[in-house]
Image (cartoon, rainbow, N blue to C red; front, side, top):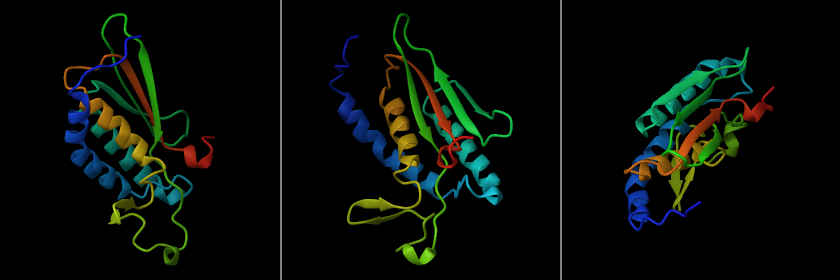
Length: 161
């Protein structure tokens, strides 16, 4: 496989980062706590938002899917050039319960920047994974050099029963 040697790629990554961060913040605001049965509507909202973001990032085939009574997952794909490898990207859009509000310096579902770091439930685990995949997809403005399938599931934090 030939390494990607596009000298403009770092610049394009920098260009997409502000929108990517805004998308991450929007996802963090959705309290998609998979362990809370009352949060089911939020899990569906989170999956719908991820699906819309993947479509907006250029994936022509995106569906929100379930297996039996599972929580919603998002599956998107795009073919690559003929003969190119196909890559699977994984993340999850569900989060752990926030616990005691007294343990937080700010609302866990309202992103807050402190000292150059973004805080909020899901900012790292794993809505940031969704954001990283979006940034990569958006950075290849001339088309992806590989085929890609993106799986963003909604029950990693409960062991994906």
